[in-house]
Length: 353
Image (cartoon, rainbow, N blue to C red; front, top):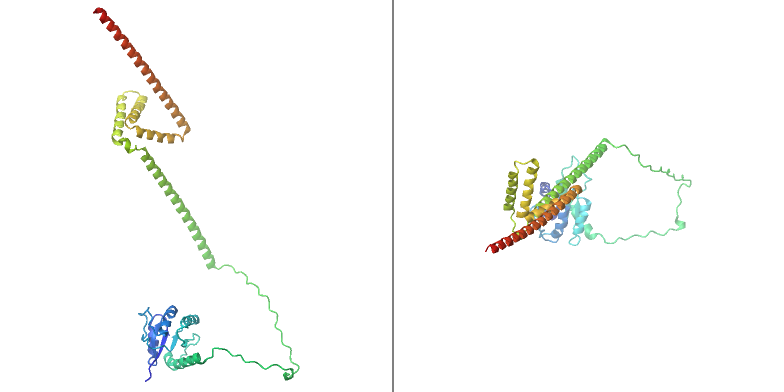
């Protein structure tokens, strides 16, 4: 009994179809390797032709894996196109020259056909032999035969001299472009859907942009507020305490309110505020200065309020200067009066002595 012919089979997933074909080819043929895609064929067939084992996809390979035998042919199923076979042959052209067989998709089996497996056993051996012989015996160069030179005496005349003139083809009509047809309901529906999607995307993008702007404005206000509050605090090297000083200012304002509880509405409204502000300047001078600067920044946005503030502040400063000057004068006069009285008393004492 002759040994089976080793071949490479190219099929597709699932592999149960390839299993049936391999079983039908036995015992005349031995499928030593199974390829399941053109990419696998380009990567694995050259190694198999060299007698080497491919290094990947061993789980999908249901062949015998007897790579010690050189394959006699490569058989491709109907799922492989002509371009796939050409690409795989180009990948293997430097390794070996074996016949490549591919199923013709234009030929279908008839109802009375005994079956593809019987035809494979009868046709594949002869096809492999013919392809191998063609590969080794076909010449690599093409020889062109020369025709004999034409001689005027050897020219033959037709039997009938009066031949009908050849019919001329009627002039072809110019090809007119097809008239544009009206859009179908499907086209109109697709156009409306596209327009609705574009409008929805535009509204969504606009809403997202406005929401981002709103959140940016809120974050900016938050940063401004936190930075403003942080700028009101005194530096650490000043040793100024906010908490005890704020309590002292509150107690001073309450004291002013207690003192003016039986007075008119003007005093009850202004005296506690003035006493509290004065206590703040005494107890928390740096913090009060920062608060005054912040209030002045907001007052500058209203020129009328800022102008009145500057006028009242100037009047208050001038009044304080006048009070200090009058106080100094009163102090000097009282000291001079006391000095004169002391001298007079000392003179009386001396005279009496």
